[in-house]
Length: 365
Ligand SMILES: Cc1cc2nc3c(=O)[nH]c(=O)nc-3n(C[C@H](O)[C@H](O)[C@H](O)COP(=O)(O)OP(=O)(O)OC[C@H]3O[C@@H](n4cnc5c(N)ncnc54)[C@H](O)[C@@H]3O)c2cc1C
Image (cartoon, rainbow, N blue to C red; front, side, top):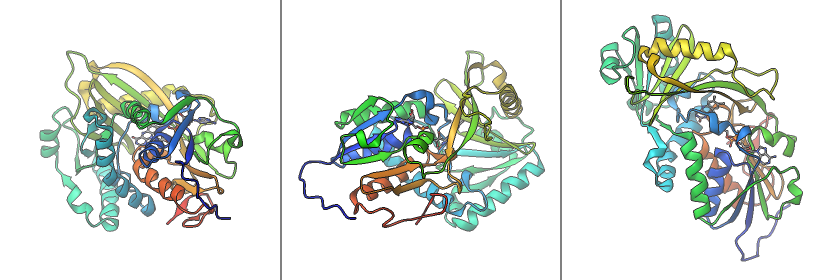
């Protein structure tokens, strides 16, 4: 059924979820003239709070994930506009990423990823280029001299995710939006013309046909002391002994991440000792000077994942749109998602009109 919209008042939009997806979409809607109210259950259930904030498109290109790579490249290109809209240069944490391999076997793995990206994104030849150990040492002298080789991904940076959330909220309030600290259990009870459900894993109980699973990730925050070597100036993404570890710079230190596995118990939000130990061992091997940093936080979060790895962005019915399932890339994909959501909200109120939902609820365009 198509709803005819003749009412001249700005339409009221209720957004369920004050994570990175809900807030980015809410800001886009407020900027487009809608009356927006965000309902959020609180930070305890928010993956965006624990995340590292990497904007990795080329580095996220894994064979078989062609469509996700294309969405990621699209979204990275939109990030400068979002950063300009927020008006706070400190949200940006790094401009480029350096991929490094610990051995020839690890280097083979990285070159498989690079070949895949180059084959799918021919323009990426300029943005993803091989670098030898001498250049790695020159760019990032704090890294171990035992690294083998790597790739520089230009323009693939990172944001400070916590500052980002604060700035998105502030920008939304400045634009006339509201944020209410409240869990929503009944979409029908909301006084709004349109509803966006962007509640991460919480979406499952609000829109039951959206299928998501949780991927747990442990992550560490380290603070530099006066005796420490400085943090790297780029995101460092390493492959060591067949495992991945990354270092993401912050004003006061480094974020070290991250593990990924499906938890037995989603209620357990605490990091496991084994995950923390692996991250610390790999980070120290990559950057021995981290020994003098302080460990300020060992955290864990649950990534909201769809079955096919693609975000679920679609109309549910004439009033409700859903945006979730961003897995390991929700921060990266936030500007792309906001654009898709606005297209859905502004278009005819018919479910699935311009997009075909896959069997898993993902979106094929
Ligand atoms: C360890 C780790 C590292 C990561 N690193 C990166 C990275 O470097 N780059 C990247 O792009 N992504 C990263 N991610 C993934 C990213 O954090 C997620 O994809 C992203 O946060 C998803 O955003 P979201 O807004 O959908 O969900 P969330 O951030 O989980 O937010 C959902 C919000 O909805 C609220 N909510 C839930 N249910 C309800 C309800 N019923 N009523 C009201 N509110 C509700 C919650 O309180 C929460 O605030 C990482 C994730 C983890 C765990």
